[in-house]
Amino acid sequence: MEVVIQGDADAVANLAADAIERLVSSRPNAVLGLATGSSPLGVYDELVRRHRSGTISFSRVTAFLLDEYIGLPAGHAATYREFIERHFAGLVDIDPTNVHVPDGTAVDVEAACSQYEQKIRAAGGVDLQLLGIGADGHLGFNEPTSSLASRTRVKTLTEQTRTDNARFFDDVDDVPHHVVTQGIGTILEARHLVLIAIGAGKAESIARAVEGPVTSMCPGSAIQLHPHATVLVDEAAAARLTLADYYRATYAGKPAWQTI
Ligand code: F6R
Image (cartoon, rainbow, N blue to C red; front, side):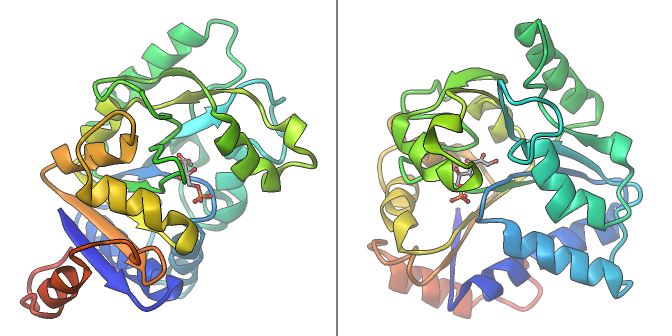
């Protein structure tokens, strides 16, 4: 695992955008795994900016979102389908039919979950998966005690996560209790994981995910099992990392040819 500590959120976003640009330049039909929430917003802004300046095209890219709420009507502003449209997909040249989101409205949710897994497999798997992390350590919407081998399925949100996400709704009572999320086993099959965390509110979960034991009590710790995981954090999110100086020195001494 590589931990990269940057001075601010913009620097974090730039590094993640660089990794995506490099991937898409070398593999125009790359498969991206996309996260929603606040953490990747700077990355999407930067990718949109680079697209508008002609540096990067997503015309042959396929994207799979990590998760979606259950119980919100199609078109609801807080659905992750609408979120990704607003912040990324609707602002670049990606083919809308190549943007896949778990179906939170399916009558047969279990069938929809296995179809989602099948679609990821049919696309050849995810090349680069963007991730955020919850204050309780959740990855995707895999809350604490989620199986580290789990696949796409329905989960129940913790009250902490519902409260944390209330900012996207008029009222905390409007936040659904249930979601469809890629499993931790699904996420771990992506070829490169890029986890982004910004701000002091993430310091504890980042320390547990990076330096704590691998445990379903902190689903984010599952990234330790991945052969190519990059953790991009600002100083505030890095505040509880015991080996912060080591991560800084390692990154500073990295050969120029070696990318994240
Ligand atoms: C979003 C997702 C979640 C978020 C996490 C952090 O698709 O899967 O795991 O990444 O809840 O959310 P923010 O970035 O809003 O703090």
